[in-house]
Length: 204
Image 1: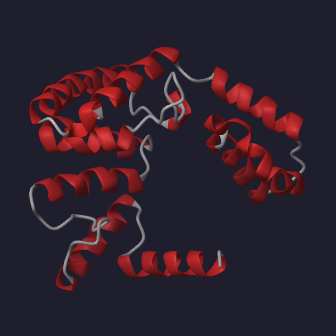
Image 2 (image 1 turned 180 degrees about the vertical axis):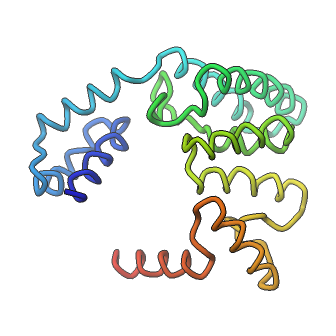
């Protein structure tokens, strides 16, 4: 049963990938999910996405990467526009998750929500962090995603990460970091290292 639930989740992750889902059909068929069922679930998934939200996130993603963030004036101008846009999105939709907007924009380009928010939290921590913390408590944002965005702020400030997702903190901070990670539902550093090691060993 758990395997089938995981496979159904996989279908939504494959949603923007065109016919690439076909390579996973042997796995899906093991759990009684044929190609017709895959297409039906993808169509149902897409029909539940909000087109207006996708429009907004497409615009924000394009703004974020304009001139590849090489022009400081354009970058700051676009970050300010995206900050105002995301505060409105938060008010109207909550956290713009994959379930609400999918993973691709109007022309198939990726919606880089985590990247955008990582830039915005560096621009205005006091406006972004409280909202993300609110979404974390409601279960709208994954702990790992929350930690990635928050720790980007500490990188911007040249400080050690609060959750050490970028591996910049010293060993002497491990107790504090582990307590912080456990409070939001992340495994300890040692446990996470074991998970990664087991995953890579199993995929060889």
